[in-house]
Image (cartoon, rainbow, N blue to C red; front, side):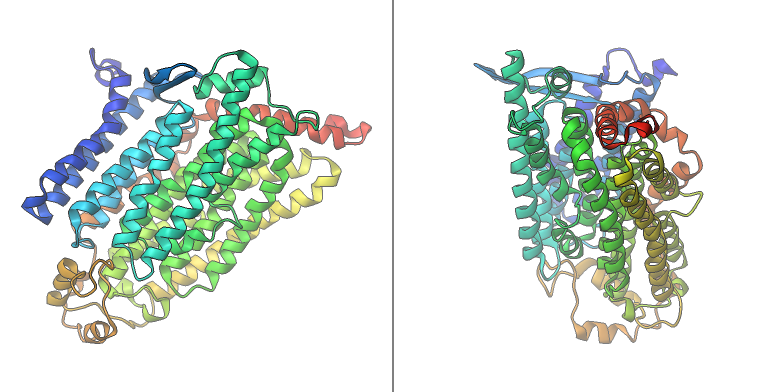
Length: 586
């Protein structure tokens, strides 16, 4: 079996480069096929996405067959890139337990993004699919980068394709959404870059070596930490806040979340799939890769406040989702709420909570991508996302309704599905921290915030199941178009509004109301929609039923990333503890 997974002459490093390069090659092929029309372009994009997924899955299997120890990289490649003088920027790539599943998820959701756009995108399809494939390469690269500069290049490179995907193929307020998305994320990431440069310069001042190698910097900072005192200018906290500026916007953490709902609502469905499923996770990945292992004392100081902001985000996102009448906006605010769990679990700084947060990145990616894909499919059929104008969808599209219910249950954490595992671990770790891992002065706060997490579970079930009831069941309020009209919308929905993503006017909706003669089966899932959803459903069930498959391989790396910050937090709590109770802090 090992010989099959790792054939002679095909190194893991070459394999990793091939996976990242495949979408770029596919983008060039799609561009060259533009003269052959829409079918050739989208078929080439689909083939590229599927081949990339197959290669990524093969690489993941090779990783699982021979996992590296914590601190080491699998499929490592290290070549000179920008060298000379004091610079030593290298083309350094590799996978470890922190990046493995997000790397695979990026490849998986790119297939979903292509297939959900199959009928929805008919205007300028070449540009759309080229940008989608370039975005996939950037997403794969950001999780494989082992050099600070290379990480930042990929980090920024994810902004450009999505900016154009939203700005050109989005809906009515697409330009405003694209500009807000770009300004927020660029401003935050520039501060993050400055913080990373300070880390590099500090390390050079202590070791005499200018290196941008992420693991090398992590090891060096363990021996020569940035100062965390007034005498040192609180430099470690300043750098932590600089990194926080970029990573918090990416997640996003309340209150810097305001760009996200608009971006989701205005983005084309394929863009929403990648944004919710992968791009939001880069912020949490940044905390795990940089903040926790490199800046443990600052993390320990900030952890209670970020834990509280995570809990606040859970409740805030859920309450705002509860009053939404636009189905896509509801799912967008549910993302704000569910990413709050990840933030809370990460900064609980207990092993079980941090592992749960890392798994919940994948769980939320699957559930949110599935829900955004299904909202797009409902819009293509009924030409509205207004919940009061929908109803009875299950009678017309029973399989679509079944998939919507499955991903809803995944989102709200039904036992047996993936969402339950991650949320249970996060809440268990949070209560563990509240009961026995903090000083008495903080115990009430941690218990209250943990209870907010429990309240979020109830609120999440409320708004999602209420939406299911109103959209899928009850009387039909907006029937689908007839067969001929549906075909016209599927292939020419952009004609009357340029590049607005297939919007139709009120007159079209009124005319569509007379489409009762359409056969019911025309409204259910098509083959390309099954191709988009079925792989996600498989992983929703797989993680829910056999979570150890996804927890065990990455557990050592995830725990190692949080070890120093957890120790610094424990020391800080010990300092606040009455002498007779110090032994209680683990």
